[in-house]
Length: 182
Image (cartoon, rainbow, N blue to C red; front, side, top):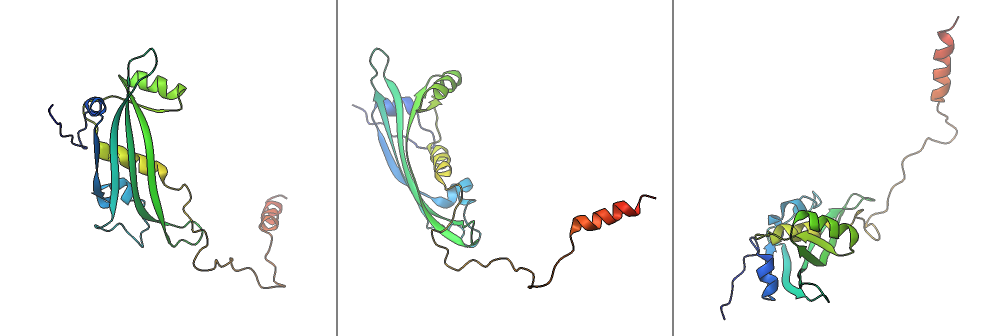
């Protein structure tokens, strides 16, 4: 039996699944440019920051149908993002475990994806697993990054000193309107 070597940057998903193969490793976070761009400017991604990942191919038997091709991916890293309350950096662990089903053709993938709760992709002979992992990690980022408790108290906007009132801007407009009529 010949042992195949799989390249995660050019992965033949069908062969990978049929062999029940597994791959794992690390990539420098800085190489995932779209994900790195989400980092807080005060704490940019450093060369030593890593993304730990694992891929596993599977054939899942479905009663009465051909076996389905699946790719199970795991990825984790840590990223500093800008807190939307205090605007200071906040570190987040970012991780994903995703089961992806592969089918022949874009049309079949779109139809099944719409009617199924599974994530469905079109099968290709050369999948860039790093780009796929980056997509999944981007989807796992918090929509609104914020500290549970900001490190510094938030300051309220300065208000007008007591007893001092500002003119009503609509009163000024009313005065202009009245000045234009005879």
